[in-house]
Structures are given as structure tokens and as C-alpha cells.
Length: 107
Length: 112
Image 1 (cartoon, each protein chain N blue to C red):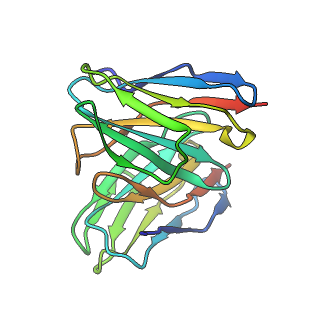
Image 2: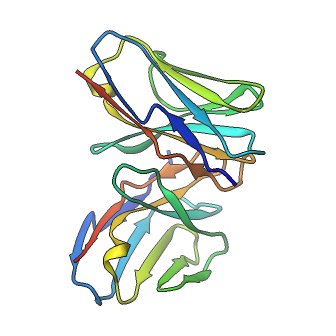
């Protein structure tokens, strides 16, 4: 069974701060996806990383896929209140395995 | 392009009852997957349907079942509800295996 561990579980920061959240596994994934979920809504896909070592930028968000394709990180620069939400990583081909997420609160 | 829609958005049921949830995928998507989300377990895969056939199934009891229609719309059914079935049930659609999945807003089921 492929498992994804996310850390930290909860993060509370002030507007303007930088942060990094992590997604780790002992298994190799062909790709990893990052989602953001707001209360009462479904997850919204932010990015898919496919190639080991790949870095993708989405405005203030930077996603990196580990060289061995077992881990990924999400870095947010100058966090804003609109970044508040549950950040989930997921991997798999036809069925997604999700980590339990990092709950980010920006105030 | 319309997103994934799920109905109803909220549902309250009593233990022992059964419930049916509905999902309409994005137009052109033939794969529909269902997930259960709880605070303790996070998001867990229930099953996937593609062209009216169940292609994958997660580790859930037989009380959880689903089906897909020829227009790709899908329903899931939970029989003999238990308190532990209280959760957010999410549906996701995609073109197929290996393609990105797009989630609906979910159905919040509360079992009392």
C-alpha cells in the first residue's frame, strides 16, 4: 500500500510570511498532485508534478518533486489570507492515494 | 465548462437507513471516482467507474455500492447506515486513468 505522509499537520502564520509543507512516501510515484480544499468544498487541483526534480511555479506557490519521485514540497511566498485551506498531496494512476493534509491558516 | 456537480449537498439520515448520492461529471469525462473524507482518516478511495463498469474498488464494506449510467452520471448507495458513515462524500471525474481528476463540492452526510 502506498502511503503519503504530510507535514506539518497544522500551520498558523501571519500574512506576509513564507512557509513550506512537505509530502513524503517510501514508495515511488509516477506523478504527484497538490490540491487545496476550502471548508465545505471539494479539493481543487493546483498542480501535477511528473518528472523527478521538477519545479513548477504558480504565482507565489512553488512545487518541487523529489529526484527519486518519493517526495514533494510546496513553498508559499508572502502568504495571504486567501491561501488559507487544507493542502493535500495525492499520488497514483487510476486511483488516488491522499495524504491527510496540512491545514494552513493565514491571518 | 460546467464543473462536477453533486446532489444533494447535505443529508441527514438515521442509523439503519439507506442513502443514494448522485454525481454528474464534467462533460466528456468518462471516469467517475468516489471518495470518503473524514477528519480521522482523511480522503479514502471508494470506487471508480469507467464506461458503466466498476474498474477499481477501495477497502470498504459491501454496504457501499455504486453504478454509472450511459451518460457517465454516477450514483453511490450506502445501505444500513452506521454512525461512522458520517462524512463528506466526494466525487471526481476525469477522462480516464492517468488523467487529472476534478472534484465536485461533495455531499455532507450526517448519520444520527
